[in-house]
Amino acid sequence: MTTTSDTPVRTTRRPRLLFLLGPAFVAAIAYVDPGNVAANLTAGAEYGYLLVWVLVAANGMAVLVQYLSAKLGLVTGKSLPELLGERLSTGKRRAYWVQAELVAAATDLAEVIGGAVALHLLFGLPLLAGGVIVGIASMVLLAVQSRHGQRSFEIVILSLLGVIAVGFLAGLFVSPVDWGDASGGLVPRFDGPQTVLLAASMLGATVMPHAIYLHSALSRDRHGAQTETSVVKRLIVATRWDVAAALVIAGAVNIAMLLLAAASLSGVQGTDSIEGAHAAITAALGPVIGGIFAVGLLASGLASTSVGSYAGAAIMGGLLKVRIPLMTRRVITLIPALVILSLGIDPTLALVLSQVFLSLGIPFALIPLVRLTGSRTVMGVHVDALVTRVIAWAVVVLIVALNLALIYLTVFPTS
Image (cartoon, rainbow, N blue to C red; front, side, top):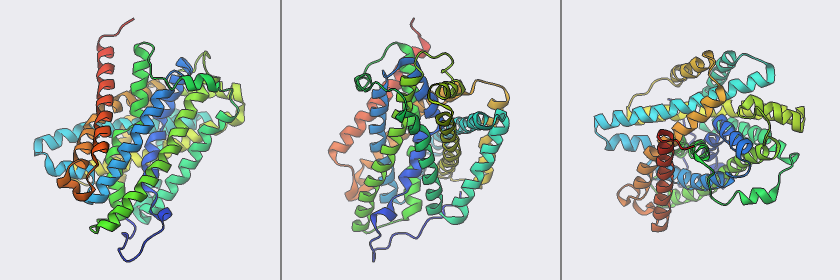
């Protein structure tokens, strides 16, 4: 992977805060990818506002997690995979890479399939052809990063994030949301094993493992290695604003998707698939809203698959200490998604299951992150405060508990 970065921040000048923003918006694309669309629409259509609390809680967790990841990259000048690669023995490092690579593959699967579905909705293209087009388009986006640097890549991704936000928020303004019932969805509760499965899927689509690995690399590549304490502190402050702004947008988009489905798709037949949900949205809210929704889905697929490839390269480089050309990696990781599309497997089911798999991978990224940012040996004066460590470990416990419940209910289903 080419790790071209903009000129590192100099100690003799103080760039404006706005210039320092950007890495979190790239990472935030992972929080509004097609997997989110499938999970959130399914949850809203089948259970109304019941699981609103999952998205609110997951987004709160994501703010903390992404901040810690970015902070780790800023303070150490290394990505999370690189730090793990330095600390693990050869056998453990390779085993860890296998699970991380599977997570990255599941991510890419969701993103390519989502983009292919969007092209089918917009132009009637076969899913396989749409998957190929999404793969080629993602290569073009990655070429921007390789040739013109990370700042240019951030601008392109930020533009796509704007399209995504419009695409998924537009329907909310014309749908009959019951805000009283929606506020009731803030009370944590489940309604049977299927809601636990959906909650895990929504969590996996929100707090995404590859985004945890990626953000530390994005911060390192953007700002370079800094040693002066005052500069690092300023970058950490900028990172807080960066993460908060990016994830407020991503969180609003996710919640809007669920509210839209709960208000307009509840009880409608066929809304258990993205195609069916799109048809129902078009029928209920008009072809303009349906078209805007499909464009948002396409932008989501294009942006997220490019960011996912960036994350996969960072994982491989840090854990295996092997770097292959980013375009070569893009071609290799495209194959599983194209196989799924060619076999005619239900794309929405594949999307939801991929998010469940991602949820199972979260602890493997999150536990090392919290341990490293809580280590004074690693972070020095920038080590996490006690209250931050307590909250972070509470997040770890909650996520692991949900995953254990998911595994139990999958192995021992109840009626």
